[in-house]
Length: 116
Length: 89
Image 1: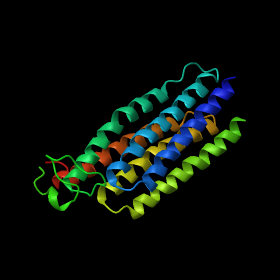
Image 2: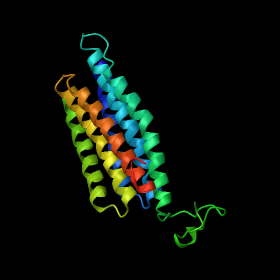
Image 3: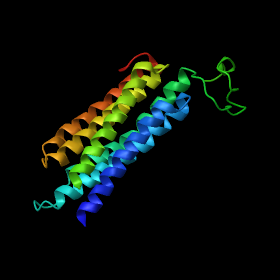
């Protein structure tokens, strides 16, 4: 029973990690590329760490809580680095596929000169 | 069954590693490359956790924690450099 649960968690984690990097490879502009690794990969690694905690807790050596530390750290730092990356991209005025809102700028990089 | 699943997971995470590395080499802009580097760090943590399950050893968690910490700090430093032209002002 515990083997099935472990297999499911490991497969889901590896699949989501792969989907995150696949999105990083496949998507068209930076702002959509930012979504894939910061959400899917975080979920995948979280699932893998949950599987690891379950695996070592059922080995008979008591509760294993090392993984919680890594999970907590990854879940706190992923949004912070994504926020700073998007700020850096806006600062460099990278091209976006979608139209930006009227009061910020138009869709083209040339008309974004009045941005802070 | 678990060993087959772990082998499959190793190949999936390895493929994810290769795709992120491609983006690191090709990525048209600098934030793309930083994002690819950050993803590579997280993929390395995933690989270490899988290795820990594969060898039934808890030795690898400290390494995983260190890699996660270094990845976060280097991402923040590179972003600060792009934003301000300096890391510590």
